[in-house]
Length: 466
Image (cartoon, rainbow, N blue to C red; front, side, top):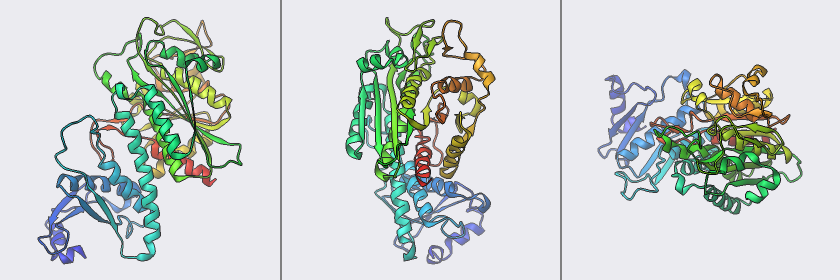
């Protein structure tokens, strides 16, 4: 219809080879008053055989950003994939909504200068078939909730460490609990000591910021004794402690609380979608800094479940706070349990900045996580967890030591964390390679990505359906 109204302009551009339909290709056509819209963007969707829902999400993001760069304020779009793509209307609308919101994201809280181009005020999804309206609205609503949860995580992760302390994380959780009708518990140092949380207390020793142990609980099925546990690493700044990191790129360590932000964002989405399932998020939050009272290499600490840990490197601190968090989850009957953490540089060496590492003690649960990830277009890969790796972190002076050496570092770190899961079905997601992006691509923008938020929301929805 648009091509016809433009006297075949799009067809002519295709014939001339200017429009090829490649994925990511965007072509601007001026309407010159022939239709109410002043400009038309023709977006390439790629080969039909490779087209999927994630293609819709990606093109929605890129086209929205392109339109913003041309100072557009109101944008209308067809239902991508609703025709020959064969995508259900609700899924297409959800992907369009998620793509636009995530692709247009920018973090400007600390900038005084206004951006060159203002924000797009309205995105209108156009569909002539009135029978599809209810499905489209449903998809739009879910897409908004999920994308806004990712934005919530991105905002937290992008904040400088002086604006995202453990106490501020606890305040955000407090607001979240109030908005979404959830239960909140925040444990302070005395309670941590009483419960024997030597991992979290040990890591926090070098910082002037008080550690916080944050527990957010959503009760969607009061009659069920089962509660899904989400555990997120909350190191609000990681200097490495006494085992000090190199100064280059240390500023990125403000994002070492990405796991904590992720599970809080998932709870935000859960609080709005209101699935009939119980979910509890556990976030151990602290800074990891050097100081006169800081944890030292060679020290021995005791985790909440009684296991003793020899400290080889104070820069292997995430697994120490997760040890207490998982012990707490197991003690309180949270099952299955999924932890999310920017845990190791080794996972980035293994999988780059494209893929999340998946580690588990339970094949059935790991398959569910992988399916949930595939459905939302997040790339994950399951890593081996063979018993032989455990030899690497055996200690001569304690039950375990907190590093297993250079080789297989992502695996030995995951297995160390798994020591505190016991028999509880557990999955560990190492997002150290994927939590930040240095470039724009599709619905991922520079800075925090909010990776695994959409996967975990989808996992909760799928578990509810079971």
